[in-house]
Image (cartoon, rainbow, N blue to C red; front, side):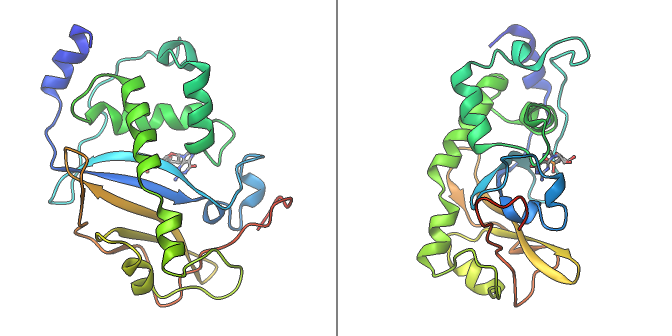
Length: 219
Ligand code: 5GP
């Protein structure tokens, strides 16, 4: 860790726990599938981010700026190896064509506040590791909840698929409710804990978990 990061990390806001957020890819493209980057759609969750959070619902953000983005190329500045970039593209892709911009945003806004702070590369690797540890799709499948193009699922059945309470994030599009994201709550040592909030957004008794048909550009 360089001395600048060390100093800034010491100044960074303290926080209480972390939210590890994964998004259901097909839900990101409902109604705006044509805006989703080519190749983004698949029947998978992908990483949104790892966010330091406080028990009172507030969170620290943009703890410091350690890159001058206007002048530098993201790959060079982050020193992303081809191997790391490939893993990020596979599991942390953006629905927008510019996944690097998404990683930059997530690092700047949330990652710079994460403790212990050993820099962006370590943060990216740590988040990818969390993604390998929590197979949200498998937990849902074990409870009989699978992506489908028909009816949805009761919000409590989705919640009960998990051994610790997660936060289920729903999104309403054209009067229909979609499963947008799942938040896994992690203490500062990255152990899973019960989330305080069960649902976020307009979740109801019929949450759609839409299935994407491979080969199509839309849902
Ligand atoms: P956050 O919720 O992490 O504070 O901000 C998310 C930002 O990243 C938004 O400005 C959104 O437009 C941008 N973004 C880029 N790609 C994605 C993506 O694949 N999913 C989500 N949820 N946001 C994305």
